[in-house]
Image (spheres, one colour):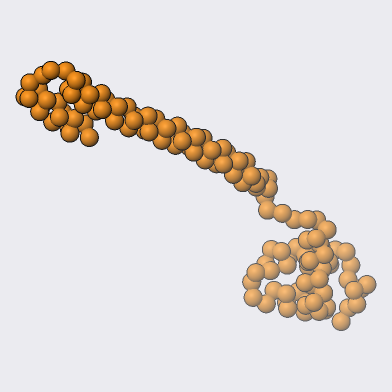
Length: 131
């Protein structure tokens, strides 16, 4: 077996090159270790050190994390929807009060004005329809 000092730079480059090209195939590391008369551990160690020194990454730009921006936008949208909900509930309360006031006003008008029983019945039936 060669010692690490006996393996030339060209041999090391060949080992790394073939490891990264064919490393997924079965028996490649054992074949490299046998061919260059070294251990499998040396092949793995050499490949890891070269990978770490070159900082190999996948092609393309790294993915930018936009989650914080998206969360801020969603929180803003929630605040807007809650404000709309409060506004609409206030409008609903005003409309309900207005309907009650109109029924009460109609009742007072019919009670104070001299009208026929038919008109009072008609007003009461209209009042019941509004409810």
